[in-house]
Image: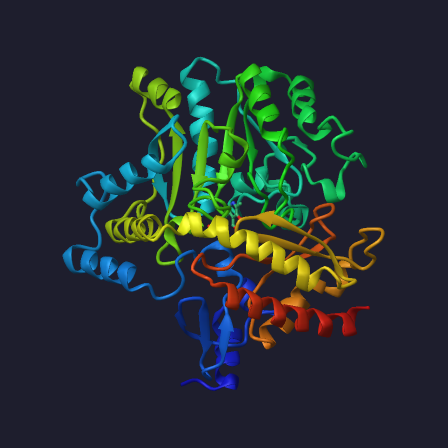
Length: 455
Ligand SMILES: Cc1ncc(COP(=O)(O)O)c(C=O)c1O
């Protein structure tokens, strides 16, 4: 087994990017079991971050592992253009069964970023095939995150993640995020008349509806807004505006999809159906790379009527091993009623978080849905004022929490795309009430230590 020094040397010699510099991980993850991860020294950590937002069934599910092994023993790879893929056909059918009724066909890929990239291209080609090639702009919201590839980053309003690549991005316009805690208009619900939704119609008219192809959302926010939950009127208003101007509504459920918010898809909480839905993390449970784009029947119909192929595809997309694995994940979610369990456990999760953490002066807000929670960290609670970005508050809390044996995900940019730290927690759906209690006790102690350094 490699010692700490040897590990650090290999990391510095061979790994680039986020795995190289200061802030890179120092501890080897040896194994996982249920809601726990173990390091090489046998120390146990509650995987309260679930990945982030990936691990829904827990670690080392025998059912999923066996399904993956069975497929590997049969065949691990063949090219999609030459062979029918049985597990993938079954997976597509199972996904359509749990998706909003208007969504009827799947396009597979390998990551959330690829799924959003794919959705942008489908939206544009849909308009091209209908004789509207000038509809090219994809609108979105500030403080959003849709992925690191150039198209997905273009629709992401996460300033800090965009900054160094600005010249490479499409500069499509954005509206403010519907985040009441930092309302861009400094208004209060419900007196605000949901100005953040009306902003979409204003923007479409300003740029010209003839140029707008689509509008991107995350139903419940992720890294960009620390699990923002828009008010009940928001998505029905957005849906109406999109319909009025022939703009496709693209619903990024990379985090929320496959149960994380207590329903199969987050948008269902608002009773709204998107035209295109993307998902990734939870559909794999962390057992394989895989993602999906699910489209409305009207989009499928246009491509079919025009006999138009979709000029797109990735070599590894929908490979039989990933397909068999995701099929087993969906099987476990359904047979063990884990989506319903997530909804039920989510109530306890928020109740406990508020009871155990709200008293901390640095905890400004606790928000989210199901087993997806953002804990916003503030310097001044009365003014909702963030910490100075340079202090690296969220990253520091992540390190302290890990020392206490509990995992969470740090993020920044919540207030304005640059400043505003938060700590996200999203445990596996199999978590129990006593483990939730224990995790919040550990987090409570970690935040107390954090406050000694930061206040
Ligand atoms: C909402 C959302 N969309 C897209 C992505 C990108 O997914 P991936 O990292 O799999 O490319 C993420 C990743 O965190 C996400 O949270």
